[in-house]
Image 1 (cartoon, helix red, strand yellow):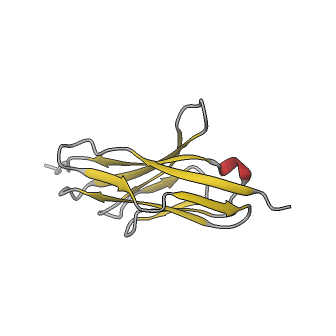
Image 2 (cartoon, helix red, strand yellow; image 1 turned 180 degrees about the vertical axis):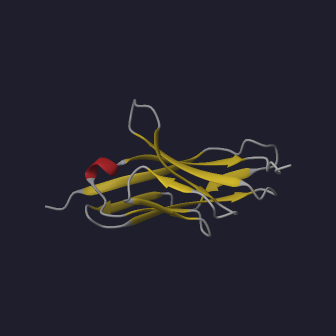
Length: 119
């Protein structure tokens, strides 16, 4: 018997006025265990130093960190589990080998940081 999963994408907002982030269409996903699923969001900002974060949340639980990636500079990345990967060109979260425990709300968040120049 195949068990189905439901993944829903919810989006946070940028931290600076004028920055924007939102889910792409079709944010609710149904899939089967062991398959691969992709969730995506889009953002706009004028900053070059942008970090994209992904979190998930189970009902009545706190947010759980999944990963971050420097979106434009391409010099930083961290994931809490190798099954979670992100591409910055489309701002996708790819979950491989999906498990029933992956059924949750997923959040994409944008953090814009000021560049600090070395003296």
